[in-house]
Image (cartoon, rainbow, N blue to C red):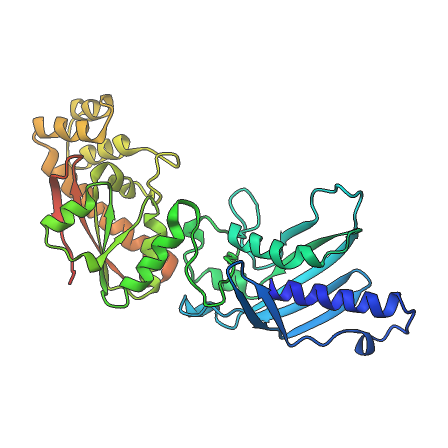
Length: 361
């Protein structure tokens, strides 16, 4: 938003000097030179350096700043951020959309095609630009990240559902992790801190995860909460050079990874019984065993049926090994690193079903 604010201020300076006073069309004489912009961060202020700001015509200007991610992933450090600001006549005094934000090249989009601009960033745009917009105008800001599409290939954005570029989170001036839907950004922040001291992390999945971890003598300092965002956080761990991750979770959640489902929310996909049934086939179970799994309603009930049939150990060992392989391949695909993934599966009451610990501290 610093680039957008610089562009808007420059444009207004030009309009005030050139149009109001009928001066010759000399940008050098009429446009305010801006080297930095003061931003309202809602809980304070920050002075942001401005690389360039230029008036393009009577209703458009361009501002350029450089990204400063602080302690976050440094691949975006000094990435150019362009903001193309355009003024339009306001149709009437109750015009609802005074400020519109658009995704230009390199700024990611959601699966619905919306600009990947987080709510906090939108609030910052409102706080900093709305007071500057003339009463008879509306403003459209197109955010352009010239290196965004290429850099996004080296991030976990696609795993987060952000396509074709980087997401715009906003800034606190000191680059703190920001909250996002379902605490995803909070989990990423926890991961970033813990990987500094633990290169072998433990992801806890499910309500009983921490109690199981305690029984297995796993230090709390190595545990990262994940919610349903397993794929995204696995990739994040790989990007931060974790050596291994142990997935410690309720089997009804974790078996989804064996089917290539890396967001375990039941609202996204829920094929756990079909995945368990496929594993029955792969370990040599017959049609009756497959039918028994598909006829129950829960993963725990499927596990009990397989115990009765003498197939539980083979099926869940096979599933755990498949989860490890799929997870390691997922990290390799999106982070281009090799990272070991171990698996501990437990039931609804916290009883361990399978334990393949892998490497951990």
